[in-house]
Image 1 (cartoon, helix red, strand yellow):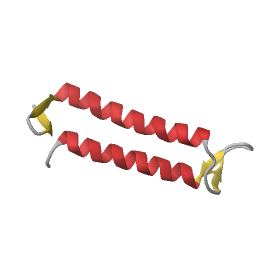
Image 2 (cartoon, helix red, strand yellow):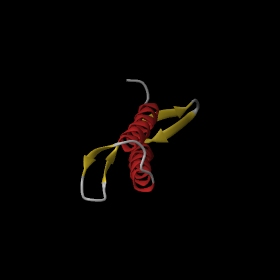
Image 3 (cartoon, helix red, strand yellow):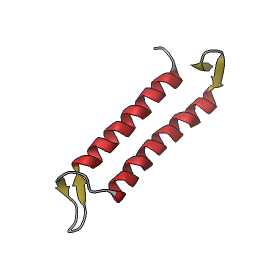
Length: 79
């Protein structure tokens, strides 16, 4: 089974699966790094005295996961 990532380029299913896993892991790491290094927006949920979930954290995860979903769709090809 193959997938068309770019016209004329076939990606075997194992490499495709690895690419998808790496994509989602990178999106998660981006969101976690953003949440750790910034404090953007008001706190929505207080986890401990010094930690919480900010609006910016949700925006960062939303953007990262949207990009990962689009790339996953591209890798998997047409439905």
